[in-house]
Amino acid sequence: MLLEVNDIHVYYGKVAALHGVTLEVSEGEIVALIGANGAGKTTTLKTISGLRPLARGRVRFQGEDISKVPAHKRVALGIGQAPEGRGIFPGMTVQENLLMGAYGRKGDVSGDLAQVYEIFPRLAERKSQYGGTMSGGEQQMLTIGRALMTNPKVLLLDEPSMGLAPMLVAQIFDIVKEINERGTTVLLVEQNAHQALQLAHRAYVLETGAVVKSAPASDLLHDPEVRAAYLGGDLGVA
Image 1 (cartoon, rainbow, N blue to C red):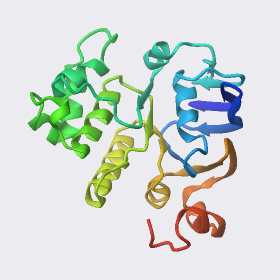
Image 2: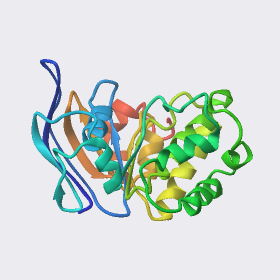
Image 3: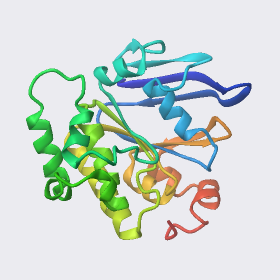
Image 4: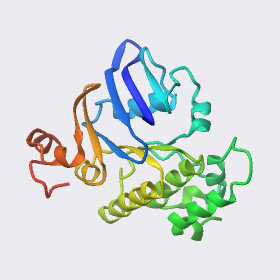
């Protein structure tokens, strides 16, 4: 198993954000986390990447317990994250932003940079443009590209479609599929449950900091409770 999250409990002050979340991600999968705002999806990703401390439970990566490993060392192990809100460096160029993703890596990263430009031709066209002058869709591409420059074994994607026009949303999901087909495992947090379940192999449903359902994504796409809560009760509604 590539990634194992076992019975994790996380607090913000005295408030429990996660209580007993358990999930698994196998190598080569796309796994989706869906749920309402405040369900604990982003906190789960931050805990996996080391940005939130555990009160209880453990995180294992490639069979090793990394629960107390600091965030920057988790990146070096192969856990990359494209955060919600993008978090690009607006005063740096596209290429400078991408190279920040490779900060701390040793050796030549030109091959990885070329691969990112192959996946995102728009970034190649704008590699000398400042990140802050790009459109929302371009900034999202840059955020994912920067995460890929860490050379991740698993890519944590937090709300990649947020704030994007429908046409761009479809493009971003096509890119996520391509990244997975090129060999990167993906753990996806996404409010657009319909798109996420169409893309993912398996999925977990989070409610108030706990997993309430887990199944193959195609099963959840047709689950009456999931449809009523997250799909508008209609398979054609995203």
